[in-house]
Structures are given as structure tokens and as C-alpha cells.
Image (cartoon, rainbow over all chains, first blue to last red; front, side, top):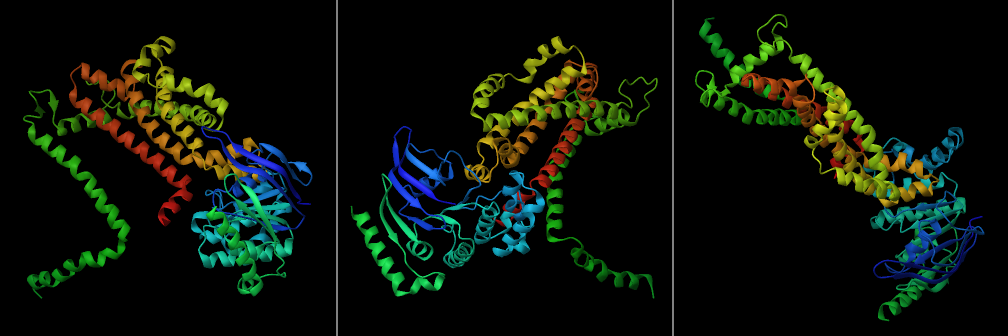
Length: 253
Length: 295
């Protein structure tokens, strides 16, 4: 449940000038694994996520989710967007239960789960608030809760904490670690933040730009459960030094 | 205690009155009161100058009546007896106002019922856009006044002709703004809905429509203004009742005082109906008002 397979996947955007966003991507993610896609902006990491989400179609290659070809977006792959993308006219509760509602799930089935999720992300007191009344971090917590309300087999997260201030980002990373450690859902996480990638993931795919390729895959063997205190450990620093030298090579070439 | 000391004693109390009264009005309340007063300054000045420029109740050698004559004419028009009066307009103001308002209401609602779905389709669906938008854009430059002969030929001197013209006039701004709103829906909101398992119809109903509401209301306000223009034009030519009919009829018999009173009535009614739409908009778009309040 929640396995992802990219086999030699390429994506070309047609237009006045063709852009080859992804070139020959091969990547497998196992059930319950946390994989980060790390790279500079414009390296196609978000495109890779959009292909898996079903928002974009592959140009070449095979893309499978749990053994089935991805054709369209669906609640089995919950996407968390950078700017949360909450519906501004719905309050927090209505945003969280939107998924189950449109899928025709009975109220009795989703209600208690949604309430538990709001508690999990610390927003049970804000059920009636509108998105505009929330801070960026709170909005993103709603974004996570609404995705979890659908019981997805994989979470696809597109720089979800990229727009938050440093302190809020740390709190959100801790929250995500806690949630993931209790649920064990497969996660594909796009980021340009090296610390974030090391802290959260089992494996980091370092990407290069134009065309987007996976340059290197680095397993992160830091002990779990992790917390933001891991950010200062010697093992962490060793991983960071290694990745930074890779990235430096990338900017020189 | 003499009367004079009493008066002196009461003076501090009166001079303190504005201060002690000020907590009754909030700062926002005082500001809106000030804006309200500012708003009437210019019209009041125009009326005063206009009144003073006239001699013997008229200007320009009897062509234009002074405001007090128009006011007198309105009073007879509104409250005069309807029976065997020599004045054909006596006591018919409210009835004519209702005739016009009813036509505007019918035409405007008809325009909304057609324009909003069509606009959403044009903005949301490429096939609908290709099939409908060119026709809308082709017909849009034809002013409603140009449709008058067509309307009379098809519907005759009847209510339906006027309602048709009003609906047509209001249709264009509503459809254009709705389509723009539907086109401009943030892509990630649509993606989020699809990701959560919503079908295309659900996305249209639960995402594209609410996201387009700010634009739709812009269209409604412009459309309502055009609807008032259309009703006057239609009534001047295509029917025998309403403020537009009275306007033209009064002009023909040289009753410029009634013409002025009629014009003022149209303006007032247009203003009130616009305020009503604005109130509904504020109520429907609470989520947007909070946003602008925060930022």
C-alpha cells in the first residue's frame, strides 16, 4: 500500500520553446517510506510530484502507484500544497471534511476522525475560523489535516513549509515527524532545504536542473523517532556536509 | 434664583454636551456620519444655485423649472387625486415606479439566471468557451437602443419587450465578469478539489462558482445600472407605463417640472437598488471582507 514507481519517466512541456522538465527519472518508494526530493528551484521536483498527483501527464516512461498507472488525481494520493490552497469561503472544519464529503462518505463515518485530526494538528479550537483568520502555519496544519481525513496511501508534499518563518517551520517539521511516525504513510516530500530533507526522510534524491535528473540518492540512517533536536547531532552534520558538496558541484558546472 | 443666573448656570452644561455625547457614537460611526454629511454638500449646493438662478420659478426663459417647482410637481404626481384631475400624472407616481421596478426586477433576474451559468461555462470549459464566447462578443457591441425596433416587432408594445431589453442589457456585463472570474480561479484550488476526489461537476459547483462570486457581483452591479438605462429607454418607446413613459410623455406636453421629478426618482431608485446589491454582496462575501480587513 502506497508504493510508488517511476520507470524512465520524462516530461516535456510543449509551447513556443519546448522545456524538458524531467529526463529519465527512475525512482521507487516503498510502503511507509519517507523520501525527499531535494534540488534548486526549476529542477523539476515539483513537476515530478505533479505527475504522481495526476495533475500533469508523463511524456515518456511508466509511472505506477500501487502497481497501477497514474491517470488522474485522486484521494489515495493526498497533496499538501505550498500555500495550503484552502478554500477561503469554507471554515476550517468544512475544509477538513471536504474530501470525505465530495466522496459521499457518510457524516457518521468521517466526523469523529476529522475531529481527532483537528486535535492532532492542534486546531480543535479553530474549527469555525476562516482560513484568512489563521496564520500561515495554522493554515498548513489544516492542509495536512484535510489530506489525512481522506486516509491517503501516500502524502505528496510540495515545499509545504517553504513559505513559513524559521521557527514555525521547525514546529511544523516536528509535527510532521510525529504524525508520520504514528501513521506510517508513504511520503514524497519536495524541498530545497537541506536540513529539512535530512531531518525528515529515509532517503534523499538530489536533483539537478535542466533537464531534471536524479543526480544522487542518499539513504539517511539517523535513528528514529527523530525530533528537531537531531538537527545538531554530528551524524546530521556529516550528511549535510556531503550533500552541500554535491550542491556546490552543481552550481559550478 | 433669578432667570439670568439660571441661564448662566446652564451654559457649562450645554458646552459640555458634545463631549458627553461623543461616547454614544463610535469613531467609525462619527466617520460615516461625516462622510454622509460630505456627500450631501455638492447636491445641496447645486440645488441652491439652481434655485437662485431662476426667476419666477424658471430658468432659460421658461425652459427649465426651479427645484421648488419640480418638488411641487412631484408632490402632485405622488399624492394628488387620481380621479377626474386635469393633471394626467396626478397620484400616479408610485404606480409608475412599481411598473418600472417590476420590469427591472424581472429582466435582471432573467439575465442572472442565464448569464451566470453561461459565464461559468465559458470561463471553465474550453468547448463552451469556443462555442459561446465568440457569439457573445459579436452581439455585445450592439447597443440595447439598436434592439428597440427588433423588440417592438417581435414582442409588440408589451411588457415582455421591455423585459427582454432589460435582460439583454444586463446580460453582457454579468456574463463577461462571471467568465473572467471562472477563468481566474486559482489553479491549486481546482487541483486540491480534484485531489480530494471531486468530479468536474462538483468542482464547478463547489469551487469555481464560489471563487467567481466576487467577479459575479461586480457584473451584477454594472448589469443593474444598465437595467435601469434599459427600462427607461424601453418605456419611452415600447410600453405605455412606467417612469420612462411618463418622462417622455411629460416632455411632449412641456411639463419639464415632471421631467425633473421623474429623473430624480430614477436616480434615487437606481441608487437604492445598487445599495441592496452591495448589502447582499457584503453578506455573501464575508470571507473576502475579513481578508481585506486583515491585510
